[in-house]
Image (cartoon, rainbow, N blue to C red; front, side, top):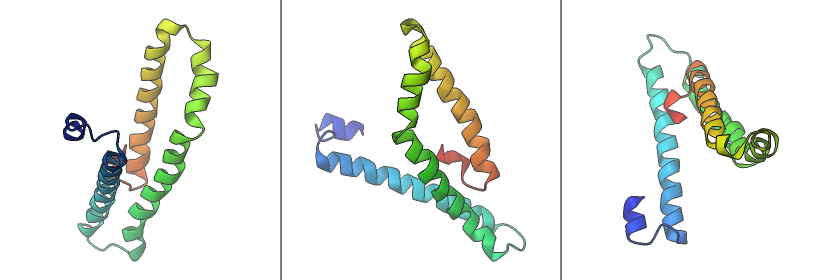
Length: 117
């Protein structure tokens, strides 16, 4: 991203396409990493190969979709409106920390890559 920013390409459609393709590439690599963990099991069933894909895509759709649609509005309207302006950054950091501490074990438990978060 810094190379795109220094070349003033980050805010162009091509720059945004490059950043989006890098994100997709990282997500696919993490899904493959989760699938490789199944390969070292002694006698995996066929469903164990698909569990990382299903859970990763499911979390991406459900949690990723909520992160860009209704969750920012909910946090802004219901939580941040109740705190003082000088405490908003601390509240946002606390919300992010709590979500991270819940998201990582949840992904690991469902056999998706905990690195996805």
